[in-house]
Length: 158
Image 1 (spheres, rainbow, N blue to C red):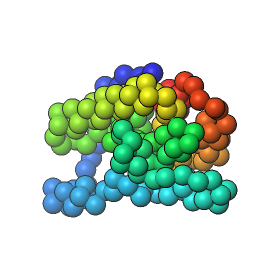
Image 2 (image 1 turned 90 degrees about the horizontal axis):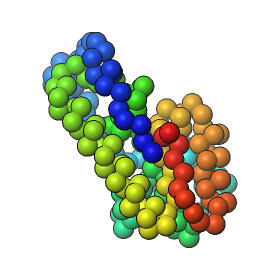
Image 3 (image 1 turned 60 degrees about the vertical axis):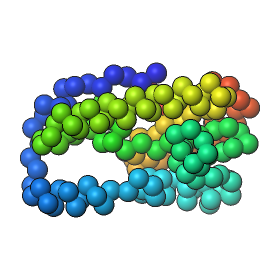
């Protein structure tokens, strides 16, 4: 179960040292696939010769990594875009837009989790920070899910 967003982070002052045009270009260049945390996990799985599919469009939510035979779906979530309760730093401009956007993203994540689990999938959600700073723990979460035959999903975003 996902924790509700702590709204305290909305009011923390954050200075933006970029102009509007620089910020716009920056936001346009943010990837939705092939991010560094995704590539790190995928590289390790390939190194260990573990077969997986990436960005499976036919599966609800288009998971970043999919193990079809084991019915395990792995999502690697950005701390900002998916609203990490402690590490999401909201922009100072257009606060209402961003807070609504992140709430929608979290609701969509929750709905995708529910649908996949209902269909018998194990759902794993890893935060980008954890992949970068607790890599072995993230890999172990995936391996534990792959060892399970089938059953209730796991979620590292608790």
